[in-house]
Image (cartoon, rainbow, N blue to C red; front, side):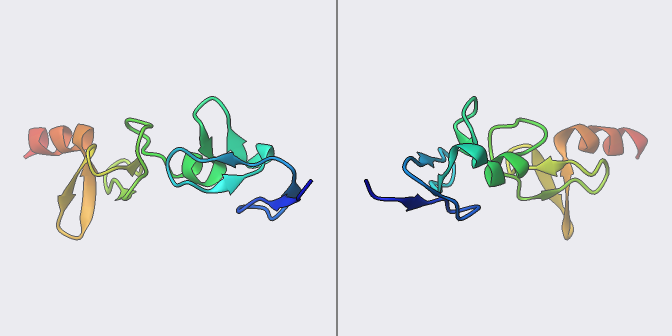
Length: 90
C-alpha cells in the first residue's frame, strides 16, 4: 500500500482525511472529526459563528471574525456585537 503525507505535519500514513473547508489532506491527528475540518481551519474559525474562516480580528473585543459576522471600519473590523455597543456609546 502506498504511503501518503499529511499536508500539515508531514507524517506518512496510509489514510488521509480531507478538510471540508480548505480541502487539505491531513492525518487523523490533524483532523477534527466532529467538525470535519483540519486543525489549521479549526484554529482560524470565526469565534462568533464557528462556521467560516476568519478574515480579521475585532478591534474592540479581539475575537477572530468572518466576513458575515463583522463590519469593516476604516482599516480594521468590528464584530456585529461590538458594533452595537460602539453605536450605543456614540
